[in-house]
Length: 456
Ligand code: ARG
Image (cartoon, rainbow, N blue to C red; front, top):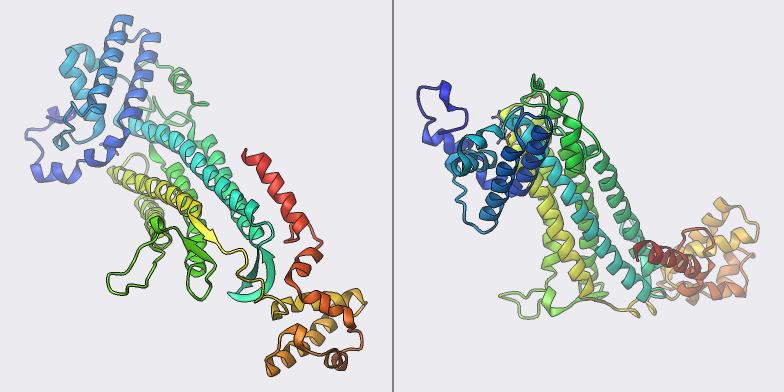
């Protein structure tokens, strides 16, 4: 019989119970649920609402129940509706009347809101650690490739040569902001809704701050209606996960491109690539593809939960039970993807020399030629125009920049001298960059050193 059944003449129809039972999903919260109950019971005892002996009896039993669940000794029966009911009913089964005191001044509404916050708090820590490990792998590769030059792109058109390390460092920065979003969220998460009861508070003299303190939370969510009604912190977390996944999907896409025969820049270890059942030569980047695709799951949950919450009247509505599917889906998918992309990167080889010949005299050095003219006091817009003509001539004659004769250069502008040929080496282009945070060897080294300190 359900916890709330006495005012009904009949039992819930089995089909209705099955439809509404959430144990298959919310059992994930059993630890948080028990932690929350223990804090609640200790508070009840401090407030002399229950006796110290009752407190002890309940807490000991709750710990036993925790072990029973951990060791698969307690059947998580879907017929019991949700994890809160499973635990409470088991408690009553074990210690009788005393167990019935646990739910004093509490509702499942504040209980679930608390469980979710405790879960998010824990998972923020896990996600932060996973991101840091991933950043460390990126940094290691960057350190190994501080002089590996690749073409940099805008619009996926060759733009200017860059250091591969610089490209990877850009991801490290993005991931750092991902971590900051999580730690910022922690401020809003780490507050206790417990004691809000169903939504209006309680006439029993509880101490909400005390249970919050026991749970190592920084305070309470004061307004009892707000405490049980909102799921904004879940949405924020899923949103932070969506941004992480967006970043992972971009790197995945690049790994896929780089591993193509056309790029021939990245190759995955056999342990992290798959073959084709039909084409014997194939080596496929499935893991990067799956990360790219799983991004959709997380975005789906973001929209999913926003939609659950949209237009819900205050306070608690059963709709909110659906939040956990989205919360767990987003967190689990993001953790999985962070784990696998870290491993994948650790098992990817990047061909240092891939672009050395290809970038010599490449048109992607045209900007360096513009800067050359600017240094000779040609106004930028004019210099851009003149180099445009150089490019056009090269394209027409199918030449690289260093293959065009000095007389052809001089026909376009007398400002061009023999020393332009030194510019047609991508390493010189890299070295010549002067601005902070640029792709120059010096700036990239500076960034690497900075991250070594931050990520140690
Ligand atoms: N399983 C419910 C949920 O996750 C717990 C809260 C139930 N509250 C209620 N008033 N039926 O939302």
